[in-house]
Length: 474
Image 1 (cartoon, rainbow, N blue to C red):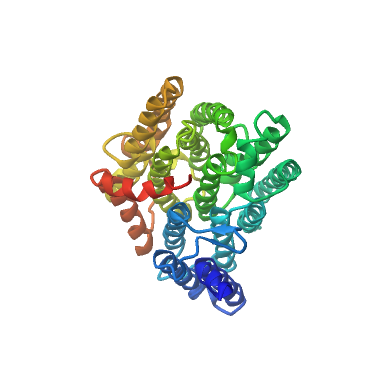
Image 2 (cartoon, helix red, strand yellow):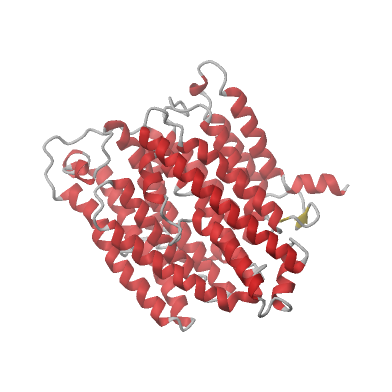
C-alpha cells in the first residue's frame, strides 16, 4: 500500500517524534536525570540507521510535500551527527546530567522540525517544519529561570522570531496569490515564465528569504545573536549555534535553486550584498568583545557570510563547497562549545581573560582549543582553511573577484580576534588558573572534532565526495 510506503520513507522523522514523546513522559519521573539522555541518543541512532538504509524507494511522499534525495540525506545526516555530538557534550557520566529534564524531548521535537524543513517540497511543510524547529528553542533559551539575562534573551528571541514568521507567511500569501500553488515545482515553473519581471512576486520571494536570514543570523537580521548567545546557558547556546543553522542554511540553498530559480540572477545580488554585510559586521564587531560567547556570536555572523557567498555564484555544483565549509565550521564550533560547557561549570564568568595561563595547567586541552580556533580562523593546515579556500576559488571561477577579495580581507581580520583566545591561553599569565573538570564524554567529543579538523584536511577527496551529494538539486 502507498500509505505504508510513505510512512516507511518517514521513519527517520517518526523515530525522533517517538523518542521526543518518551523523553517528555520520562522527564516527569523521579531521578529522570540519571537516564533521560539515553533516550534521545537511541532515537538519533535509529533515525540515522533509517536514513542510511531507507526501507522505501519513494522520492516524494504525502502528495509531493516531502522529498527524499541526496540533498536531504546529506543535510539530515549532518544534523543528526551534530546533535549526537552535542548531546554527548551536555551529558556527564553516561548520560546523567542535572539540567532541565525536558531538554532532550524539546531537542528531539526541534530536530524533527529541522528534518521536515530539509525535506520539504512546498511552502506549507516548510513553515510547519520551521515552527516546530524554532518553538522548542524559545523554551530552551528561557530555561534558566534564575538568570535575568536568560529571560531577556528569550523575550528578544521570541519577538524577533515571531516577526520573521510573519515575514515568511506574508511572502507565502503573495506567492500563492501570484502562481496559485505552494508546491516548489509549480512555483519554479511560474518563476521561469510569468514570474519574470513580476516585481510583486520578487518582493514576496525576498520576504520568504528574509525569514531564514533571521534563522541563520545573516546581516542585517543579526541583532538578536549576541544577546541570546550570552544570555542563554552555554549548552543551549551550543545547540542554537549549530542545529537550527544547519537546517536553515540547507533551506537557504534550496529556495534559491528550486522554487526561486527563475530569479537566480537577482537573488545572487541579494546574497552578495548580505554576505558582504555579514562578513564585515561580524568581523569588526568581534574586535572589541571580551566575553567569549559574544565573540563567538559575532564571529558566527561572519562565518555565515562566508557560507552564503558560496551560493552567490548561481551554480548548483558550488553547493558542495557550501556544504564542505559548513561541515568544517560545525566541527570546530561543536568542539569549542564542548569545552565552554565544561568551562562554565568551573567559572561563571566566560571572559577571555579567564583563560590566562591555561596552557601551563592543562596543555592537552589547550592544544585542542587551539585546533578549533585556528580551524575557525581559516589558518592552514586545518580543515577550516580548505573550506574557505574552496569557497574563494568557486567565486573566482564565477568571476566574482570583488566578493572573493572581501572574503580574503574578512578572513584576515578574523585572525586577530580568534588569536586573542590563543594569546590568553599561552602568553598571558593568570594569577589563579581555573581548574576545569572535563568528563570522559566531553574529552571524546573534543578529540573527535579535533581529529576531524586535522585529518579531514588529509582526506579531502572523501569529504568532497560526501558533500557533492548535496549538489543534486536541479
